[in-house]
Length: 163
Image (cartoon, rainbow, N blue to C red; front, side, top):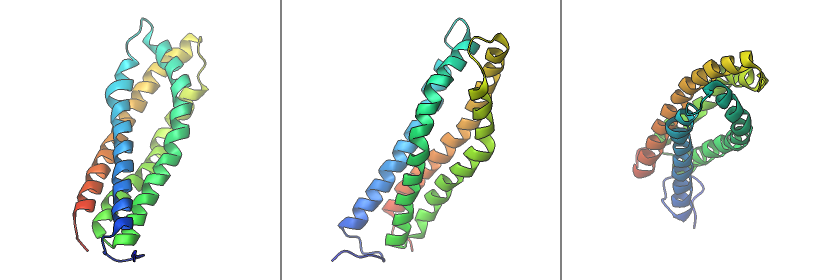
């Protein structure tokens, strides 16, 4: 019989923990990809500021539409692990991934909004976009670090029996 609460490590618990680790890894990997590949690629153009703004307008709405709900699903899975296992080690990745929401809203969203309001083809806006996208990349590095530590925490939590 499957346990609803407690440390009985049954199939449901193993599946839940595996799902939480997988989702944490996808989140961390996505953040790392943006930091290591996408942000540097924005600098490879004859007019990098205009290119940054054009790329931002194309990529940001798509990425935000995917990553916002995905972040909620990650924490729901980790919260399920806390409930199902009673393992206090799961609180570490839960707290780290939960912190990404307020950090994004209060630290990154104002920059997102400024960039989205800029117009392509306007030299002043394009120059401002170059600086804002660089600022955003620096802020995003914090999210990359948070999600990486959250992923590591999820791996450790899944491997421990700590109560």
